[in-house]
Image (cartoon, one colour):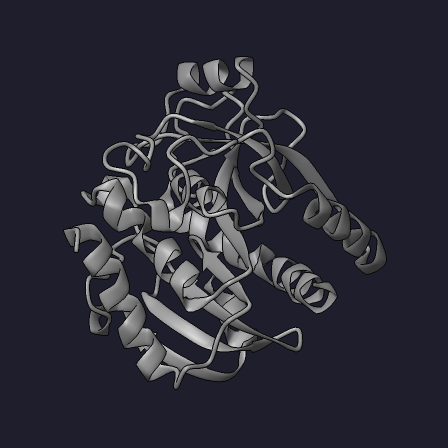
Length: 275
């Protein structure tokens, strides 16, 4: 068996054994400062990444590094409490391996979340943004040998984020009286924050929010025909009109994400109920 396939199935077999054969319906990937949603999962089985064969170790601030199985919104879910990033030195095969593992475990939907900088002038710290489309400035995770187990080499990306799930969330936000934006997410490599000129450029080419993750996972999920819903928490205003003493601070990003995590948790839980 191809080495990469072997790694995927080894990890999946280990998790199947730890979960006693239970099948998650929804996979959730929680970004910086957003791990609080995992606290809402009931009857949890918590497995540290370091125990799972071939999983990387999450070194980013605000990523606890646990794979969690349990019940949320009345359905079986598995959640990654923290993800892997290209900027941590991992190749795209390792960054996206958990998505393919979740595919083997049997997920029918993938929900992704992240902390992002708002380049749209209308976005403020604490806003939630439904991701309607993306711009990828990271290496494409499908480069290299294609594995037919996980879909075609040239998957369609016309609708990377499921329109039906987006419509459901828009209705949920009205019911819960939660203000939500809808925009385009752009991902770059990081780990340095962007310059004011880069912020202006990203805004010019159509981005509303920017970050350093998420898109590789979405591409791999869509290759496997898994419907995806994505949400960003705006944790800093990347507008470009910075004072001379302004500094982007990673810890402040976590604080802002944590403050918005309860609203995102309520949305995700309600969406899972409606699936």
